[in-house]
Image 1 (tube, rainbow, N blue to C red):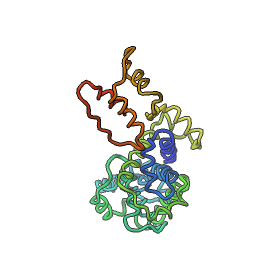
Image 2 (cartoon, rainbow, N blue to C red):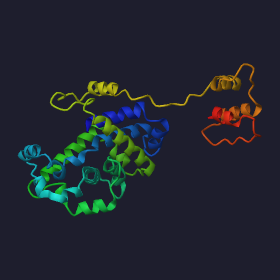
Image 3 (cartoon, rainbow, N blue to C red):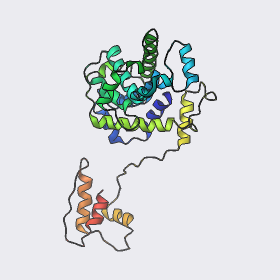
Image 4 (tube, one colour):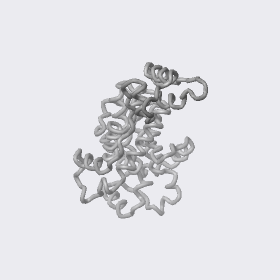
Length: 296
């Protein structure tokens, strides 16, 4: 989880397009700083649904170790097909939303618009019917009885640690009334998915025991260098006159001249305060295609 958060931070800083960062920033009170915190937090939190009986029961040896620590749970066979009602994405969505309500006073739909990113980190956000079905099987999230409080304590401890590591523990009160638009939810979901895939690569992030205690900037920077992700394309405004631009862009022969409509298109494009639609009308043979390519 910490590895995924670290990767998300680097994707935000070094790979995500400016307009995508701006989209998230505009929805949050502290702008881009909040956007980065939110991205790192959701990536760090994304696998919280694995801290449930429905998930933990799958490997009996590990489940036994957890039972010895007071986290009672049925066996994989005992849970049977019911276990499928709590895939760890949906379980994580429900746990995160519940924690925001219980521990931070969030209400209404506010928790779910953030938690759905956790729910959809395998590509498809859970449907409302999925959440309703899971509500009838609370034992999939916490074993009832004496172990229930222990399960809740562990889940809350993990969520608190995620918030602290991502630097959002002091921001959650400010986000309580935020309306997170669906395009922002989709962008953040995509970022978390990419971060999860990268952080799940054992060549970049070795498993225990060899990597024990190596959750550090050194480990994360080494993994990022090993990933060697290609740099994102960034637009660079060309310099020089229209004549120079066309000669360089289209390898024009010596003596070729830029047509008036082409020069006008370049001048208009350079004068636009922000990206927009520019329509060029001219007779056939005046160079509209080259004008359009140059204007872009």
